[in-house]
Length: 106
Image: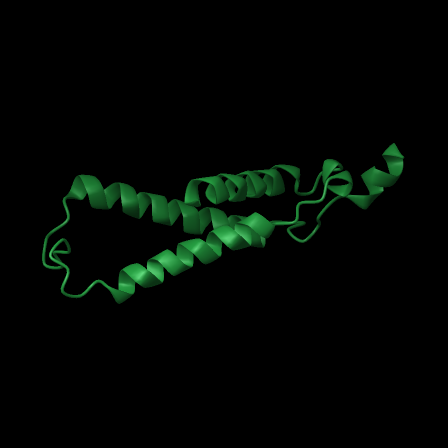
């Protein structure tokens, strides 16, 4: 179930980012309903993992993480925060589609 909904959610996110600020966005709306469902399922799974984390023999909280694992995670998180900040602060970030170009192509 997660694979099917996750695949649809990632496709919606890809279509949304690919068509943002283009003329194609005017003619093809992206609703985002599967992204919300995917986020809800992911959040529910994370809360369940957090709830049942105590007295679990598989979790070793005092174990050290090797650098070959922690460095890629840190680089990925830093990249994601930087890219999100770029998307939020760039020029025309709230412009869904360029209306002047849409009028020109009609």
